[in-house]
Length: 422
Image: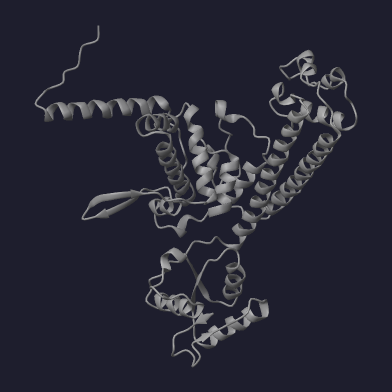
């Protein structure tokens, strides 16, 4: 149901179907009525086709949150809902939601598909571990990852009919800490035919997911190579050493993703402590590289739902709420913030102080907001991130504590004096 002002057409509310031809007829009717902007609510994925057709017709489409358009009591029909939306939009009371451009949306589709394949592969791995445990083959007790070289070799040998524990243990890679005798002791199980069938099914599913991920990587590399080069420098900055955080992830793309992201965004987001190439890719695929969509970094943090939800009345905070969100960029930044716990950097020292003072959940949210501000500054203004080190932050924290103690002592009528060093 679509509603236009009464002066636009004698039949101000019309009903249209969902086929492409009917949506194009809707766009033609709106243009005949002199409509320039359209407001619509987001409902699952069904709004996307309507949005694309109206956008192609040259109309400015406002995608509004249904939470911001709560109806008056009794307005329950689709006709009244369309008229209510039209009235709110006419008064300028609706806010447009952010939607990246077509270039970023295609990149986002590839990356989301790849993440879905990673999750599917992890489910197959969990079922493989469960099946092996049911057969009392404790392979996970001697190998940290059954999808590694040794684990996959042993599982494939089992599926090919090998049952001798010593023959299976001979597939051990020299880098495995457990000895062949230890591995063989955990490979003596009860080989049930039904469980072996399940193991084969899950192994085939895991290998299929890996094949699909490789195809996604090739498509991603091809698509990123054709995107505009926005980097002023032709040379990629040297990769930052992260100590314990530099462990390579098994699900990382099989091509030089960091170089392609540097070309696309014009800056290297992996220079920020806690943000690796996977987090940078997730952030850029969700929000893009054009930060002009948000006026300030505070608007960007608010859109990510990383700001406090304070209820203020009379300049006083009367309540605090939560801002739940499923934004993938927000989840990626929160996960990146949680890795700062073991980082010997300025941001790592700040996270540990906030964690001690406010607790882990609040500290993770605060540091995710900090990372979001750094991402905004690098993409919007081309700033470079320079780590000052944990010692600098600890010195500033110590100085701030001393000033607070001096202020508190002066307020109580005391004076602090420094004890001379022995």
